[in-house]
View (tube, rainbow, N blue to C red):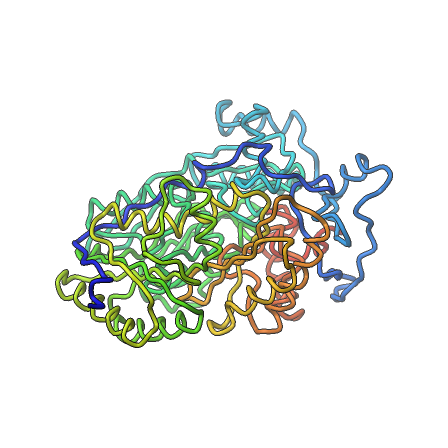
Length: 560
């Protein structure tokens, strides 16, 4: 009787949903900040500043709004609109002149030196239209040598730069804050080598993730990384932000799957760390400094990554649960009973489901009844019959225990794609709903939904609070949706979210990075001593601070 709730599945291969980039809103569809800058951001109220070689906390005293706002914003970028910090353009940075442009045209050719206002408008703005710089120049290098020449020159001139790939980030890490020169690696998009015995892929940083997946599919392999933005994001950006994604529960993070990389430091030095070995214990493993450093230590130009064989049996279940405790217990049982074939364990709450149903065309709830929580469980193995029976038996047992109230197993490719469309379409639906405050948190699994409930109680009817994400990894995507951005709402959200996360020993950035949005908030997750060491590494590799300034580390560290 209970098995009637679970429909049998055939073999299928998950199809990726359309890239989030293809669903970008029009420029004017997202409300702008009262402060005059498009991102809403509020500081903890203290900055970590250097003084005579020592680091200490200094209270912020800059007003966000002044009588002469236009003149002020030429020197400062304002994040948020009340009790906020300002970023001052580093006065030590040079400004671009015609001689600089002429030099770049000599080494890159005129067509790869972009001064066109329309193209620069796109490159200066992040895909969510929340962050916008004012760069007057974008460079399109074709190889590592050209990246090296660009950086050597910029370092000598003290011209600040921002590395850019697919520009799909969510924290303002890939767009200028002021007039930084944009270095876009999109033309560096070649697959350099693939070893079908070891599964090691070597490619350039500008390769689009979905293109790599397509290439590997012809070889019988898959990427260990899968993201909703796969159709636009670049592997170099993925590595630079240590992107997580849907398969981390199975294949681990990029710190484990990236075997080597090539990077160019601020002075133009090329660091060849492009190893392809699983084991190499000769000295410090420096590649890890560049994985997740968001282009602040060097520009990643090549990557070697361990890929996985494509297995023949993939099954996907969409499950309804009455409460979050059931979701937790289901995760524990899935790890125990599906262990070797479990490849994804995603969750979303009813608010997220309602949002998708209301804002995306052609989407419907796969289960017959509405519930408080929904889980997607994917298994990947080599025995189609055994894997399917194992998943069905697991779900039947979960029904008997009361952990699951309803569920369905995808019967074909189209149904599997429709399941993933719900989970991967939440970001698109949020954009269509209006203003959104996004937070990417790591927390102990038992604490994940407590912050959602607490924030709902705190905000009341001011906003729609929803939670979804990678439950198997302890990664919550906390989203607050409202009709428009406003100071009162922001003041209730921040720093409350960061303080709550820190109190419960979590991380304020699970996989999105810090960028410019959370650079000042790093102390909620890292000690002053740890940040000081990070600053010393930055100073060693980028003494003049030209690489992606104002990102990752507190804004004041390299502005004096």
